[in-house]
Structure formats: C-alpha cells, structure tokens
Length: 190
Image 1 (cartoon, rainbow, N blue to C red):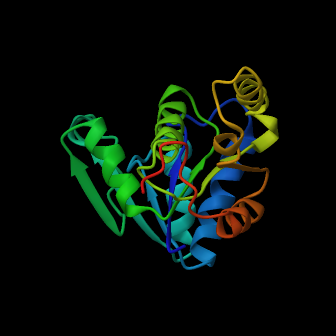
Image 2: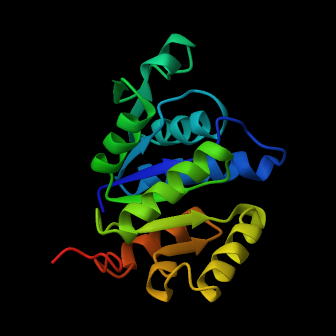
Image 3: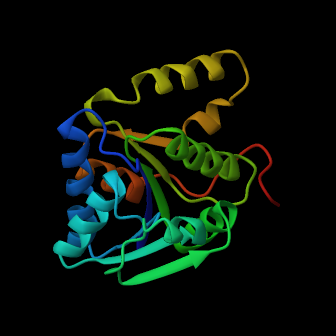
C-alpha cells in the first residue's frame, strides 16, 4: 500500500476530536512513507489532514474540480495538484491514484465518496481496501444502517465485510494493510 485516498469534511465539525483525528491520520500516512490522495482543498478536515501530512514530511496529491479552484478553495503548497473538469472526474482520478481508501467524519460529500467507492468494489471495478475512521463513534448510526441493510438482504454478508472500521489512525492503516484481497463482490469479474 503506497497511497491512500482520504475522504473527509470541508468543515471541522463540532468536536475538536475530528480535527485531531485528521491531523493524526495525515501524520501517520507520512510516517509510513505513503502518499496522501485527497480532495485538494485547504478548508476543514481536508486542509488539516493535508497540512499534517506535509508537516510530517509526507507527499500529498490533491485532486480538485476547477469550480472549487475558482472559489479559492484549493491548497497550493501540495506535492501535486490536479485540477479536473468535474466532480465525477475528480473521484475517478482519486480512485485511480489510491491503493486504499479511508473516510474520516464528514457530511454529504464524504458519504457520496464512501458509498461510491464501496459500490465500485461491490460491482468489481476495484479490489482495494476501504476503511471508516470512526472517530468518537461518529459513524455508529451508519454502521447500524449497514447491519440493517445486510439483515434485510440488500447488502451481502461478503460486501458488508469490505468496510474496515477502526477508531485510530494507526489501527486503521494496519487494518487496511491486512485486509483480505481482492474478493470484489457479487459481480466479480472473471
């Protein structure tokens, strides 16, 4: 695992623990010599994870759509910054540049990215590990929903196991490194 994409909020959230978790993850990615791939912004948890990775001597690849650059949301001191023509292109480029994925606390955009990458794994577009950094039990109700969807027959047992859940940066990166591969879902390619 040489690179990890991090999906997270463009806001800091109500608890300082979210900011601390983003900083810890950025520093841990750098410590392990991995490249951080993220949404390219300087705001919220996005900015925190990137700043922490850079401050710890890490490499950071940002991927941001041009309309966000126009709103002056792009972080400029990155190792690499890719400007895309759309959110769709952004997500595809982030996915292609990453060996694994982690979702920190966030809102609609974070959930969109997380569920899209889970869906892509389910339908066999990739076999990369996916993690949920459950800081301060932020994702408890989401995990309950996944359990409910599995019990109701809408998510397979195999697919529900795609998501690694941890509450610290080091444990999260360890879990992703040890995650079973590939096993891509019920529509697995032959």
